[in-house]
Length: 184
Image (tube, rainbow, N blue to C red; front, side, top):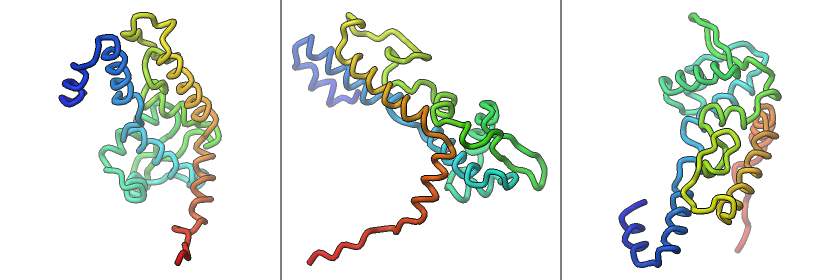
């Protein structure tokens, strides 16, 4: 929380201050946003998914195509290798490829492996639960809403695979860059 929020909250009654502080912490939480590492992991898998069945793809090619720093990409691909999503081949003609068919790799499995919880707050996470600071977790309306958010996110992320991302990429590549607007 920044200094502005701190002083502004000081003028509120204690019960409102606690609720707003908790809400601001939720909004500003890193759990609410996919990190650069998570985004790069998905983008690297997209490239490998689009080339599935064509052999290995060099780190340089993925790095160049997706504008991902090579050293960072190496770490991410090693992490995805530990997940079992990619495999590598060493040497001059080496690189990476998907270890499984793209339809067998869900976004949820990748994001959980790279980021951790899919939940917006840790008190609603199934796999990474941590007790929150609210006085009555069982009757907390904010927690109840965050459970709904988690369920929506999980439902989408479990359903969407690397194959789905590849299909969307192919479809989007065929659409024009912008729609012409002839308003006078």
